[in-house]
Image 1 (cartoon, rainbow, N blue to C red):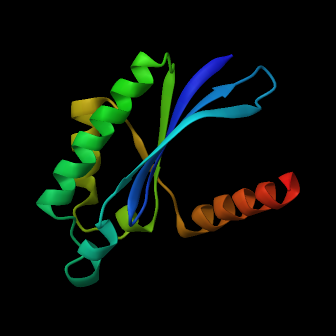
Image 2: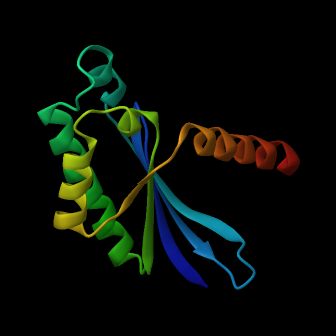
Length: 128
């Protein structure tokens, strides 16, 4: 089995799912972490991510990356949603994360975000 880390940067939290993926592409969640942030709050007034949230995001991603490394994860997939998509200073943050942590964040389009939410809901209802 191959271990991977999946990071989601949303308006109110950063989440890490550490997973094991088998040869058929099925995955099992090994561990989940969630760190609260107020990224959405930053965007209400100025559409810019605050210095405080820059620091929180970088330090949290650094900790998540360390956990992935210690746990034997071979790759980290990271996505961001509306909170980053709409921020005026998102490129600065994305470049900082890439340069300091070697993590590439994929900012989902609105349609992609809706699609992935749909898949999550569909999977949840089919598993009950």
